[in-house]
Length: 192
Image (cartoon, rainbow, N blue to C red; front, side):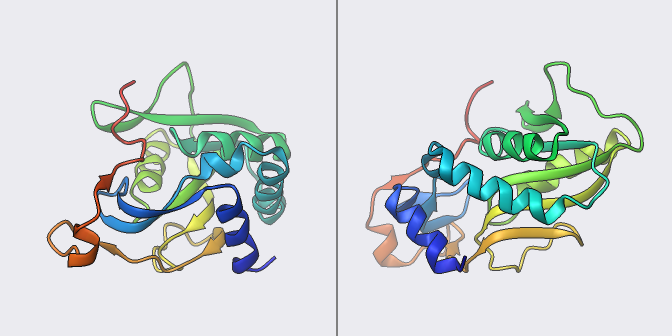
């Protein structure tokens, strides 16, 4: 499938939203991908999961990890497709950590799966947590790369959709965007 076909799926399911958004990265944008809206439909969850898992199926992977909250659904499904242990990292006191009894052993081969990246900050934090525990990140799978491939998180990085979606620092917001009320749909501010 081409980017356009994937974008049609996002639009049809209401997952691609237009307005004035503050992204998880803190940057402002006129569009927002709410992947949970598309992933609630099994046929699309299966499509995206199979596309990511097929890309990485020949790798030696022990575990799939995702950042909470956005990456959990796709990460869990990819882990199921690959028949691998599946865990997630979540924020505690502003840091991405493993909780809930999840663990990584030294040398464990880890695939990181995320729904959307703009700057890749959450994925970088998960990768750092994995490495601090002695795990080895062997790949990064993403549904939507809003940087159009400009953010390279790993040498073995794969995204289903690559787009260049403009985002702006809070001090550089264009006048027409500044006139629209701000929405902040991301999960970074959720309390655990």
